Length: 528
Ligand SMILES: Cc1cc2nc3c(=O)[nH]c(=O)nc-3n(C[C@H](O)[C@H](O)[C@H](O)COP(=O)(O)OP(=O)(O)OC[C@H]3O[C@@H](n4cnc5c(N)ncnc54)[C@H](O)[C@@H]3O)c2cc1C
Ligand code: SF4
Image (cartoon, protein in one colour):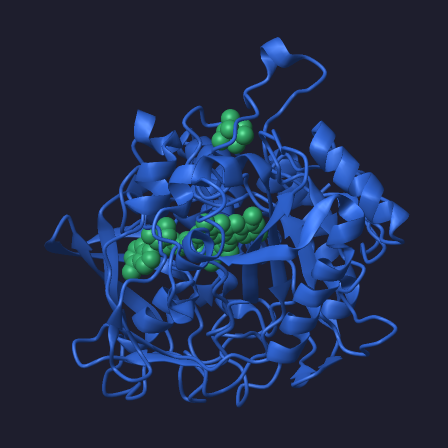
């Protein structure tokens, strides 16, 4: 059995970032990833392959609360879901760290303040090369440094939209983007500003994903080893029951075991819960770290809507994800509860509409799909969904993920949609043509849209109501940590990846201190 200082399971936003943070310490680190490298191939940028044939959705079957099988929108690759993400890298709002009253109940406070996370947000923005402009978003939390790169410019139709929204009294802002675009010096720009970014892998490795900016740089350190096609299947504890002594893995289908002083789980919220539950033994009959019966509970995933508006004039925008609107994030004059965030998604194209019933039946008789795509302006609306104990991951009969979920905050979600609809006329669009999209969500079954999954192992100070302590260490297991989005006690209404990255760096500093290796990282990749 090979032994390491640290084993990290899962190479996405949480795990990949953590390994990058620990790598300069010289500690022996093993990164286990159940997927393979995502192949660079022409299909990376094919809308038909990616959106219609679901080429990069991993083959996995989960069960819903009624035991019905479905295919979740998951991506098992080096870099995890960030390989396909839209790279909108938002900080949670300062208020999201406190308790917030919502239409359907309370979004609970985090056990740490925004101020404690702030230096790590700044460090994560630097590591992931975030482009943005401070001072435009009225809900923006205080930051100790400017964005490391200037905001990605709006193309003319989106600039017009921004001007129209401002004229309608809103405060549109340049969205924070993780693309390695150098507009001042195009010949030296890694990013070519294409239309196949959000939801697609980046063929030229210019998206700020965890493979490119975390795992690959970490592997330049000889003390870091990556094993792909290495799926952790169980964690085993020693005689005390309070220390993980063995990680059981399926390595290209064959059994293998590894051990380490510290074991970090970062498989994505649903898979991390599955791994802990599947690690039940005599001493942990309900699953590892689950004496509180909290593992798997409080699953959240954003109450999201992808919608398409039809512009009266054509919308030739190539890279559309440059604008956000947070005016309704905490409510409005006519609705006292938070509604959420409005942002753009990648520009839709005709092949993406294939099989989309609302579009085909409502508009296709009068417009061809190509014509529709030429006029489409695409929005993404996110409303916070509240943590509920019964929204949870359990194990199905074969040990697979079983996901029970009932949505919350449906009323604010509707209100947000109507807020957007109400300004369309002033923004040069047909107010009657705001159409829900399913292709971007890649599914018509809401529970399968797990892109923003979080919250199954929340951190807190009370071992009866949380799985992890404030360092993201399991209350019950001395050397077990979780650093993916599982630790979120609430998800807010902005995209979650930057928070997972920042927190991984925060936990990374704690681990370095625990291993007596803090200085090495401060010089290389620490918080400055
Ligand atoms: C299409 C799409 C668009 C998105 N757009 C945005 C966006 O614009 N902005 C944003 O902030 N977020 C976005 N997200 C969400 C974002 O990608 C996730 O929140 C983030 O990647 C979560 O990080 P994580 O570490 O929790 O999990 P992941 O990044 O998913 O990493 C988990 C990793 O663990 C591996 N794994 C799972 N089980 C095991 C096991 N048993 N053994 C070994 N390895 C395992 C997986 O293969 C995966 O690599 C998007 C997601 C998708 C799918
Ligand atoms: S827009 Fe840039 S980062 Fe995104 S896929 Fe295209 S080249 Fe890659």
